[in-house]
Image 1 (cartoon, one colour):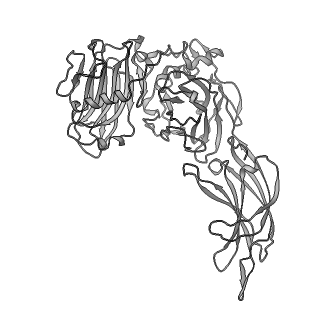
Image 2: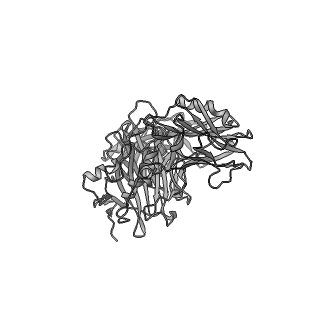
Image 3: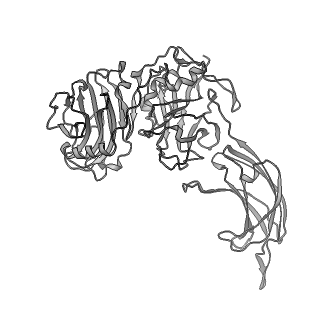
Length: 597
């Protein structure tokens, strides 16, 4: 069958001309069956996807009944418009022949099947199709004569630096990728990042692996797809829905970005990536964007959706970054792509926030003003308790040397480390569903030289299992500015069932004496930190912190994501200028990123 990957709909003209040699179903007065009263029921069949979802059958029409005739002639024409969720490239047209019976249920006489892929050439096909048995119809005979043709609608492609006006209603953004096929898993994340008219992050309206719905409900994420191996839609590995009518006024632009979370992996392991824009209710595809992908990139900025003239405009971008593995690290670069909406906007490294996940690590200085960590940092840990239960949870710090030997503990029974560099903020008995439940204060410049790891654990002192804990999270922040350097949240805590502790993460010194932050996120057992020393040690032995990535350059001054735009003369004064060229897309004039007033 021909390649139908770009076909998103079809207009099918079908004429059921005649039948010959059909099976007799009617008899009478003790004689065997000699004739039939045939008609044809036409249906569109979507075979079940390999995930087991998607099987569907829709009746499209039926012919008239021809009485007492095994060689009927109908000459009846039909026209069908199939698109969106009613169409798929592997769908079938099914023509079932029935014997009409006024006194009882109609009898099946067999079926003919036409793959839509056979119609790709656009030519008119007139031929006889064999009528065969099927489940529920053991006997069949004869043929159907059909005249059939299709006008196939292919996807409208948007190129980098083009924009389209978006229609009203709920839209779906489908992101898909094809792996190179070496069999190893790769963790890809799709995220929507919301910014204000001033280019500031609107965190509550972002949508990503740890926050699958924005606070307003305007943006929703289908959930994480770890390996790109099962379709959630028409070739989509992750799907994000946008109800633009519900986006709060505080949000002026939404960026769609894909990142490779797996350490040591990149888009060099991905054969191709694509983005589709569809009308959610019908599933009709509006356009698609397939960015060029060459090199060991770790992040791909697909597009920006921005307010314009009382509506919204989608601008395809297709730029890449070589080191970022989360969207928060790219916040300064996103701001630079707001230059047409917010003239004079600037970007700096301290606007970065590491939005981390299990196994991820960062270099602290990449997220600090001037590349220097604040004198004091705070690790805030938070959790909510469900089912109305009061669970006594405690956060603690475990200090290890380079050989993972225990040096010190900071917990509710010993609130300060021996060198005075780490202090516990005190015990919080019950998650209060607001703010941090416990804090650990860190003066990294005063940490004893022998300390190589500062691990953080949460324990249930009362021995309650942690399956009643939801939304466990931590964040590393500057207590003076209250600015986050890194954040980590668990959207699913089912893995904590039957466990009484959580090894959250660790600060560590790399061989160059720079501080890194690692997320471990492993279930453990124990009522106090003493019980988890060995589990922290084991976790660090199993998965030692990977080498820190090279220091990130200042945004807009050699940052990888803007390299292509800079080379094309699209960046002036550190701000992206005119990323979009005029084009006619979806029968409307494309809108440049330098939008008119």
